[in-house]
Image (cartoon, rainbow, N blue to C red; front, top):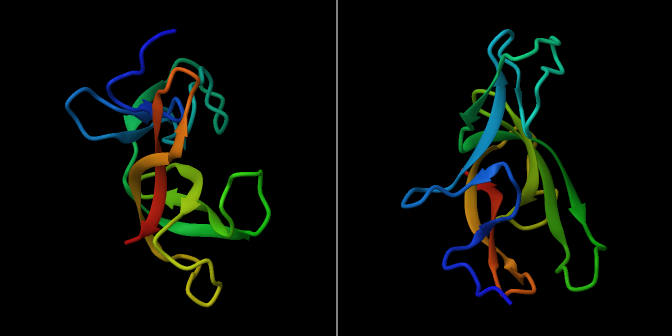
Length: 140
């Protein structure tokens, strides 16, 4: 068995944890049309350009596009929670959980400003004992 990593592992491949630096989300930007996406790609799905994709650091600020309050989930996942889709400043649309606000439609509004924050991934660990770092959104 491999000993656990000394730092948490990213919960997804677009969450970057530089050594000695602050975590951030990384997108892919088309140099031809400026479209921003998550996940590696060789072709722009907006304009079809090939070989024009470059990695970019995404903003940690955005606006709430849409949300859903989840009342039923997998065993061990606390409910209710707020699942959200956020449009980031400068491009990129990301799905994640909205924290730091009550899961109450009277308190959440479309278009509200949010920021990306990085936290432990709810205490989850893999079989080697590695912990994970995840991203969340909170009201700005």
